[in-house]
Image (cartoon, rainbow, N blue to C red; front, side, top):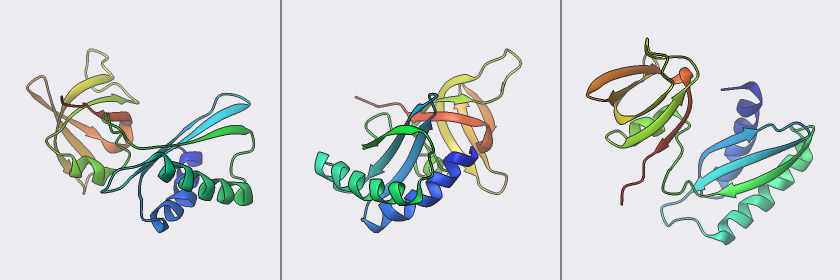
Length: 155
């Protein structure tokens, strides 16, 4: 996890948790002088627009005081949606058996592949690896090598 993302995660997760929402994770997309800070929240009863507005007000206040982002940015609060992003090792464990699409930071196969679709088989917490089933083959990926992962929605 990049240092800026880690810093924001540590600053904002306690605020969201104190409001009785699950802090799913965040994306910090640096775009020169104007960036996007997208926070994903969830709850057993779902997320409403009012929930997003409430969390936005609270996080805006914290961000104004702490000022962790030097440039202009847009704060977005969202539910994880149907294609739920996965940010933490325990989320992979929680969604074992689900189909996912994921992108790695480094090549995982000899053919130069970095984008995959597969099923989360299990999580090796001790070694910080996620075991996927991809095209009938097991693929062990270090958690630190995963750039982005999302659940594939089933209809």
